[in-house]
Image (tube, rainbow, N blue to C red):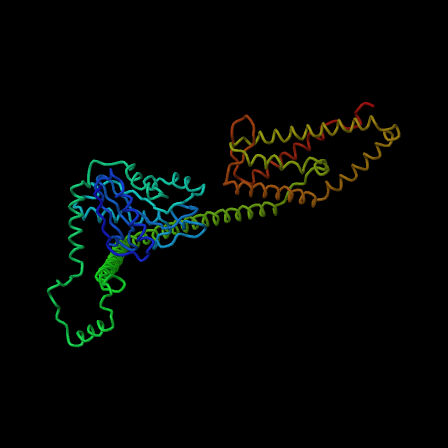
Length: 498
């Protein structure tokens, strides 16, 4: 017969699980080829809730989760959430939601406890397998297999729906050549048996009569007189189960004490971490202050530089405004001086208002040009304009009727009479001079806005820089005079052949 050592550390609160554990033991005893097996039931030394059963064989360790129910099993999620058996959640797993979560929660603590009991390192023990034992018949939902295959941590976790398959499933686990060995299992089973024997209640020998007190003896005599002396001492009438209940209570109190100690250690560790963080923050506070002071100094330096630049720009603008005021005063002085009357041909010429445009264009250029080039270009432009006007006039004369050609002489005399008063009127010269002065002022202001660039006339001659507004006025006056002379020298419209 197979060597199966079974030890129950405390009675189950659920009789169905107690019966299922006995069925597991019988299944291993029925196997002839079963190696030395150590079955530990209701193991509460590793934490609450207690583990239903642990099976140890040479090179194999398995944690059993007993579910004394049958029906249709559905697993919505393997790692979290309750499993449903016959559309009802499976209860009694403590803080864990389902058997897989229970197995994951107790896995490390069970290996640590076994290594301490066997005097082995945790790395020397084989991998811990998890087996959920159900009562037949059991059917699985379509999602169960997918859930088991999708979780990487479920490679050593199985569902067993028949107790007769449990020994075979355990043999299919990959064995290891290390611990626990058969000798280690035998030695541990011997120690466990001795511990349980010491915890059994002591019975008196037949030849020994215990010493009772007076009232206790009277009570026993009354018990015998009532005919209850033949009641067996087995549970629930006797007191044989009291030591086990006391042991279970002791273990429960010990677990609670361990949990409280662990909670206290956790709180102490958390407090230590908080103290370390506070020390680090206190150590870093001067660094923060230095960084803030440095940032404040940089900001003040930036503001100081900005104020200095703003003051410099304001001074530069004030200087330019003063220069502009002086230039305006000079222009006003020049405008108040007597101005030479312009010829009548200049007064009626339509090309005079367009003369300041070359000056504005020349201001925007980059390289200086000579003044006489500007005068030459102005004269050429004026002559070209006069010739263009004459050509247009000739074309108009040809197109007009003979009646219009017969009356052109009186019209010319009328135009001459209109032009002569303008020549004799000194205010006309002042108005023209004022116009030229305002145009020169605009040109000077544009020149100041473009950072005092020199006045330039585009040409291919040698560069000459013009900085004086008086020279601008002189150039304008010379251009107007030369244009008037060329207009007088130009042939009159009467000479155009009909």
